[in-house]
Length: 302
Image (cartoon, rainbow, N blue to C red; front, side, top):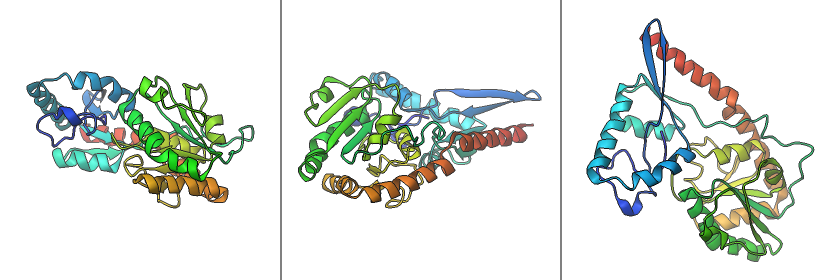
């Protein structure tokens, strides 16, 4: 399933807000068999697929949109199992398709790759990082919101602070935001040194949904994160312990300011975030959970 453009309960597309809502769309089915019994598993896809699908979605006529929704829900009903990335997604699906067999398999990170290393630079105490694909609409909106509504409050309090925005394919509207203390790096081959040197990571997202891989990767790197409620959706983190959650610009800026002013607080939150990533969001744990779900599906069909 992909997050992005409409909610399961919507009966007709609303063109003005189509990119601000959520949709559940099966883009792929994993099929396998045991003893001649086929099992279908509806797969959860990611933001890249959502971005690729947006242009197609907004071209649909209303009748095409309704047909797509009917076919999507039919795919869920016909599947032997559906796995989702968060309990929020699972509840949303079960409201529409009661009785479908589901499992929550969270987005996961390679916690062996994304981890603090002795060779990485230490936090510099002043750099605030956002990272993500910058051609994706929720990221475009989030970066613009952060730079225009939140960053000035941080810059006034911390004159030496820097904002680093990492990601490929930024539109001209974001490139125009660059300045002496705001850097757009473009794509980087290795995020780890950039994350290691950051004093804080921000996820100021207001659009989209689902679980954010960027949060899991930043947690695995032991970074203190400030996110909106939506940005941290689906992450089983405790606000104040594993990350900071704020939705209003002033409060969001104050949370970042606290991390810049209190490196010990940032380090404590980062350690807790790393522990959570290892325990809940490692590839190995997700793989075991997914294998278990496959086995249960096959046992029922055998």
